[in-house]
Length: 257
Image (cartoon, rainbow, N blue to C red; front, top):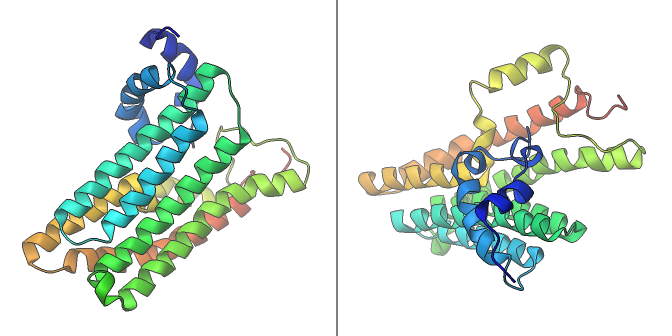
């Protein structure tokens, strides 16, 4: 099998309909990772690896990142950042391999969701373990992290349940073009553009926040940075889940037109 050129791959694997998606493409993917992933995809498409197997690499990278985050020190937090970047890379490449081979798989979509759900919830829980001082001293901080993890799962399910509800109501698939908001919900969304605190629960951003907190811990000779981060994430998770629910209920996403 001949190796395709980057130009050929870009035309097939990174169409504007993909990289220009409003709600689905992470800013890091648009900024730099799509450029990197194309080189990885170029090498993967000439092997026997399947898109689903690449997705499994994405899932495992996220799990290892969460595990690293439970360990003390700056190096563990830095490892979590690197592993989350690897997850983002595989998250780009699995779809690119699938598009190059003309494969469409519900299993791949399902595994992708599993990867993101479990990674982001596990990272929140891992921060709770880290704030408690590690696996040998689990306490209230651990429970706080687990509570944040539950809210992270709730927030993510609020998005996917829109599609479930539309399917049960026999409504057409929802196109990725945003939605129409009414009244105060519109003002809320505009305000969030200037203070997007909800992004703190996305794996890439959360890994950066964890690293920043670890650096504070290193200079403070303790774990005050991590504890402040976990303490702040709690109310933000409540606000994010509640605000997201309100946004869905007041938008056009649950209506036929």
